[in-house]
Each structure stands twice: as C-alpha cells, then as structure tokens.
Amino acid sequence: MTASTRRTVLSLYMRVFRIARSWQAQSGVKGDTEMERNYILQEACTLFRQNQQLTDQESIKRSIEECEARIDIGLHYRNPYPRPTYLPPLGLATQKGRKLKAQQRLRKQAKPIYLQSYDET
Image (cartoon, rainbow, N blue to C red; front, side, top):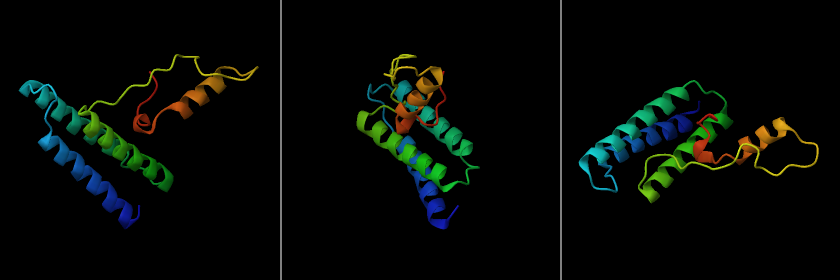
C-alpha cells in the first residue's frame, strides 16, 4: 500500500468515526440514535478489518470508492443502513441459450458499488 493510499484509508476511517460521534437519528428518538451510532461503528470496524489484508491496488480502490459512496448515501438520506437492491433471482434479461452462470455474472455486475462488500444471500 502506498503512503497516499494509506493516508486516504485512515482519513476515511476517521471520517466515519466523526460521523458516528455526531450522528442523529432522523426520528429524533435517543434510542434510535444510539442504535444507529453503534451500527455505524460496528460496520466500519468490520469492513475495515475485513479489507485490512488487501494488497491489490484495484481492490483497495474499489473498497475506498464503496466507503465514500456509503458515506455520501448515508448522509444524504440520513440513513446509515445500506440501500437494498431488488432483483429477482432470474430477472435479468438474457440472450437465448444463457443459463444460470450467466445470470449470476449479470447479478454481480448489476450490484451497486455501495453493496460490493455484501455477499449474496
């Protein structure tokens, strides 16, 4: 990891913690605020530790972009939870003769950047 990349990652990490410290739930209920703050902190720790061992510059760049996208979306909508995508299991259009592998590849490509760290369930 280069020094500039390391600096970027650490600044994102600190930014997430600053956001969590000043976070206010949209409902205004103190319990909701605490629950959302804890979620932000737990999610940040989990994802940063999960990506700690990345060495490939492209995967590091994708993780940084995902973090920035999740921060922007969370601040814009005042909702710390990731926005779900609704794609039916075999709902993507395919050409004649394509099977399940093609559907899985298309679903992976259709996943938004802010959900790249989540596995399909």
